[in-house]
Image (cartoon, rainbow, N blue to C red; front, side, top):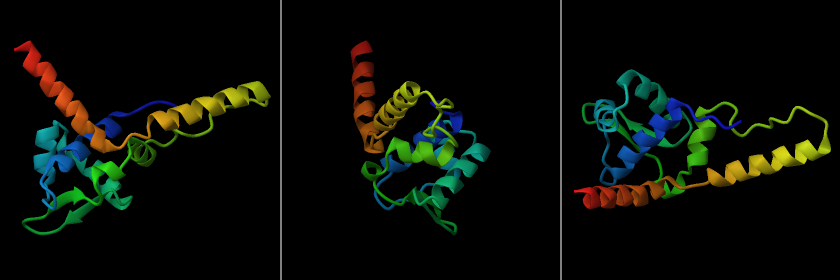
Length: 137
């Protein structure tokens, strides 16, 4: 049930970079890959999937690239995970035991609740990271 792949980690990093861009600005795949330290070929696949699911918009042409289809506050980690991970929130209980069924249902609900974090929260973590760097200098 709970397994986050590198694909999802990279997707969140890419969305973080796109969210940091000035509103309306598009970023080229090469630029996103460089900023987020993601292999460009792998990133292309991820961005296409996020575009198909309405998380991103792509702009064609010489000045084209990708941008967010909606603000980061409206994109939850759960949305990204559900797009890129095939079975994270599926029912894993393979028994008829009612107690175990209830147990795994509660686990699933708690996991879903834990992943219901808007990606705009990344800004708070960026501030924390900056403060930690300032303390260590």
